Length: 122
Image (cartoon, rainbow, N blue to C red):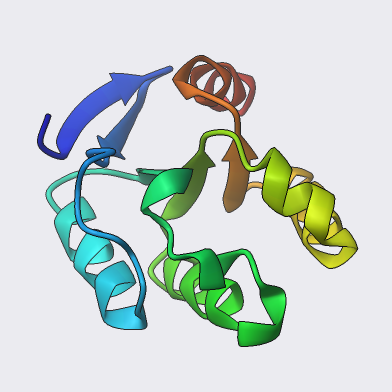
């Protein structure tokens, strides 16, 4: 599957292909943001596409990526099981909990959860 635009709960979401290239640099994140300008307000990135450095908060990569999405006023949804990363880092658990309390960056287990979360914001 290639990246595709899909409507979820009335929002246009860029669903990123799980088999797509890894997101390992800020430039990779900017490529997704550029692709979202085709009409998406949310970018759903499979957790498996994110470089492991995203989940190691000491690298600051997650913060850089998240800030890019905020700057461009796009929602970012990290979709998938990140439980192994959460088990290894209290700081990551705190970041995920805080992000999920707000409206810009979400960590969700699957697309059904993203759909429900988007529906709740309407």
